[in-house]
Image (cartoon, rainbow, N blue to C red):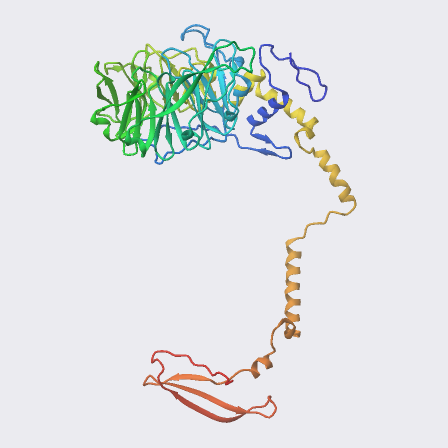
Length: 598
């Protein structure tokens, strides 16, 4: 049992013993997060609560990714990860309930991505999640409980993208460094990788059966690396290890087509079929393909349909075209590739996926409708819910998902007319996006703080908020908050000692400005020399009067000036009026001056 102290009487409130608990401070922060309040030791900032989703319906017409390639940038806001059991019968069974113990504590909030293995048909594979701080959390899921696998220290911050394969986790740091480690390994130690992937990596794709990996660099270059097994002797300093050899892995760079040395915007390595083909999409819409047999490079010849106009590689056999059609690849027994087109006349596709369990293909159109086709290309009858308002689909091995604009999750497999009625009630709204779910069918992100609090704390949000409010009011200093009474007590002595100066009014400020202006003007007039100015008589004595330059009809200029005389520099009488023609000046305009002779 764990106890929550009541703020006044400190009596305990018992929660269900089956729930994994959070500390009260963490619960308080979660509740205040749900209310839009962030505590920062000194201030509380109220935030406007809004419901928003990270992803909308993909744009139409589809476009190739931008070039040069860019690494992911993590959003600042994340979501709650909620799971449920798989041991409660088929999809037509009673609605399942979320299970708090199916998600480890560290993975419950601030999650921005789920990456699940797509390596085996029908298998659960591996699952990792990424939170807003760039920390990777590897999960063991299934049954009624879960736990975390160890991850490298470098994967606990600064990661911007993750990929899960059958056995490994691939993580890209914000510096472009690639990390790889065994998800289920006990140590969580990262493999030693070549220098070429220590920086500049934008995306990564696992090769078939984790036999290697492919990376796309920020320069648009593709590099491939194969995994080779070596045997090393056991460390003699570890006496508990029996004599023998220890298995180790080395990753070596291998040949790639010359065409992928630049200009690549997307890569995909097949991890779902024995062909093990690697695809690269160029920024001109062309697909380049190759594979390896025993690490020996071999180019793949593709139909001319894929030589231009490709917008996205969706799988090892599906390609979304820039005109809104979908091209599907098929291989004959000789290994030759042939292509067929879906939605050829409509050309309105924005996304596509294939259910490998029964080889059905599902297409999302620009109008938010899902269409299905069987392995022969015949249309499938789908549930009417899939006919409108769909903004995202995720198709994989019977775990077929669609997300409505309202945030409602839909799931189906076969028959395609039937939706899964066993999904928990929280999936009817508040699902922000689907992500790279793969084989995972028991985990989902939610934007509902009420759902998360009720599940992980065992209390309605309104009750939890009241408990948190009581705790803050009675222990405000623990949260860096000053109470109303504390502020009043601090201000009272100042007011008593007349140390608080009343604020000036607009009228008093205007009067002070006017008085200052008048005083300044009077001071300058009384003593101009003090302010580096001259009196009127001083300026007059230095002036040359009646100096005029006139322009005659013939275009010549004449300088007219008067000479005056004085005996006291105060009284002046005419001496002589002179006119001096000035020859050689420009005829349109001219300026002259009289300069004292040295």
